[in-house]
Length: 360
Ligand SMILES: *Cc1c(COP(=O)(O)O)cnc(C)c1O
Image 1 (tube, helix red, strand yellow):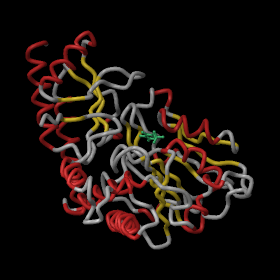
Image 2 (tube, helix red, strand yellow; image 1 turned 180 degrees about the vertical axis):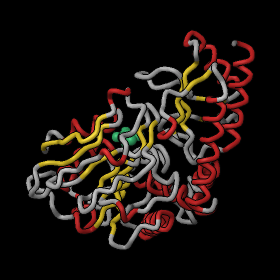
Image 3 (cartoon, protein in one colour; image 1 turned 120 degrees about the vertical axis):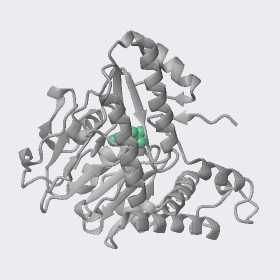
């Protein structure tokens, strides 16, 4: 077998143990004589898989009882529309924090449904900073406040959770969910595409406080109404059954590893090491302000961009895969999600040092 250290931004690396278990269960899940892919989503086997995945996620994140968990399709990008469709109610505006390419897309979509107040905008720093907490001023009439705790393209992360008082806080956690402990009760709604830190593409998780349900207008598509999905236990139509099952295997794996406190410690260690290596050298640098560097996404540039191709070629020989930065930013970007072992980061740091010695 020839597995690489996969630093892909998403779809991203999955725990090898999870893939092995899926392989072992591929043709015959638990004596059912079927693959999970072939099962009715309404049969008792699949219902047990679905229920266990939800229970494990609730346990991992300590999700309070007054929150519903949905397993949907459509990606985080569909949530850019579902959030305003479902949360506006009688209100006509929402507050958004613009801190990168994903919040920009969320804002563009929300503008189809309401007046968007962009109450913070870090575009003047090329999205390498996060607004200071005390500068945020929320509009009392806003139906909700939307932000992106971790922006994947430049690699910034909020070092705080905005305190919006009574206004529901909505977070696109696609690239940070499950990376550490969070207090779910501070949020009205959390959503995340699965393909970064949860499981395979095709699944989207939504965690919503119950009192926010039931406000979608009746002329909106049923598939875009959270209440309909809640009333049908995410089975209003056929859910992404296999992705949901694999997410369940990832949740069980996380529990076995010690849950989110353990992941938090490992993730901080991986990020700290990599940033320390970047900061210790003049050959590499990080464009992101230190106070808001992402644990999950570590972008760095070589002082001499002419060496980028050579760097990537040499990295590939060490099985270090998918380090090329986003096309809009250039340089390198290491995505170090939960499934990236510490060893992968160590191999990357060693390679960076050797490459610097040979090319500085
Ligand atoms: C990757 C990512 C997305 C994209 O989500 P899709 O599931 O592809 O629609 C949205 N937001 C953030 C923060 C992301 O990291």
